[in-house]
Picture 1 (cartoon, rainbow, N blue to C red):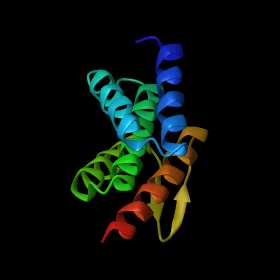
Picture 2 (picture 1 turned 180 degrees about the horizontal axis):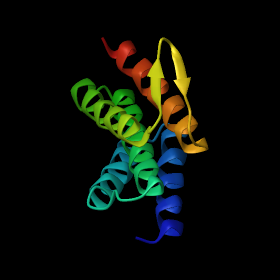
Picture 3 (picture 1 turned 180 degrees about the vertical axis):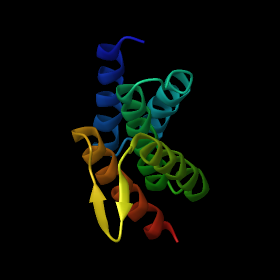
Length: 118
């Protein structure tokens, strides 16, 4: 998949969400998730799919579709956990790469969204 096009579509989804056009944002993010699910072989692929699921969850939450939002956030959390190659020991992280740092931060953000939904 062309990463330039993926970034453009992600940007469009986020722009729609920020402008409170969440019905349209849900459509954009769902289309992206569908396109990206088949290819998660690289860190960049995982990050894009995680971003799309997280945006989808936020947009679904904004339109009141709680169950769908929880599913999207759970999918994002699974991707963050998959992408994070470090290990947590006694409350300390063993960050191996800058990508680990990003995945760990995203894991915390998604976990927080899920906690807010309960």
